[in-house]
Image (cartoon, rainbow, N blue to C red; front, side):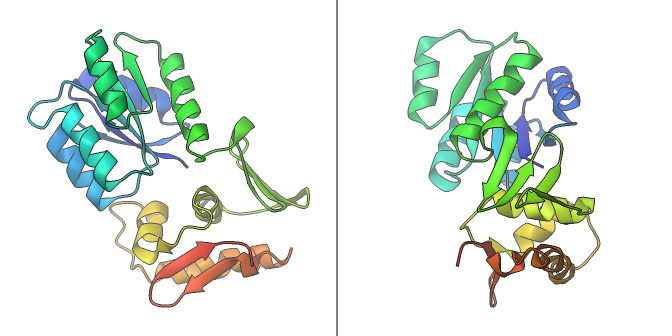
Length: 224
């Protein structure tokens, strides 16, 4: 599932956004710029919804930090200020879009999908493609050569993560955090078990070979 860091100090707005998006995205809510920086460095995200007016470290400072240290993350700015100067500065600092409050939740979600498609996080029609392997994100359905591949929830989430990061080395710790969650008491060694299970499922279609191990580093999904 797509992971989103929601940075909004207004608790009511934060809660409303989180509740609206929770069925389609994995949302991590925070309420300050300081917490945003901590979570950005500790975990992996696909998109940040970032309020401009934050206490302490403001939204522009967080945006600048993302541009310097986490360029692959998309950013959608939120603000109550209808100020052209702020918008231009946000775009200069790397924001992909800018939404003025109040807004409709449907518009927020639509703009999020546009950003994710633009960054290659999801494909058109919400389909991820690797050779003849496809994931329909809306249906959470996996097919290879147009034949359905049955996966449990954890196997599906693991494959989706690799499909979102094709050709990118993923460290064992990243995979563990993505699949098991922030507070899991399990060991990172469980990643090897999940990888073995997923390779076995993909191997039925001779696709397990594309999930490659980089010794002492992690795993990567790439063509031969």
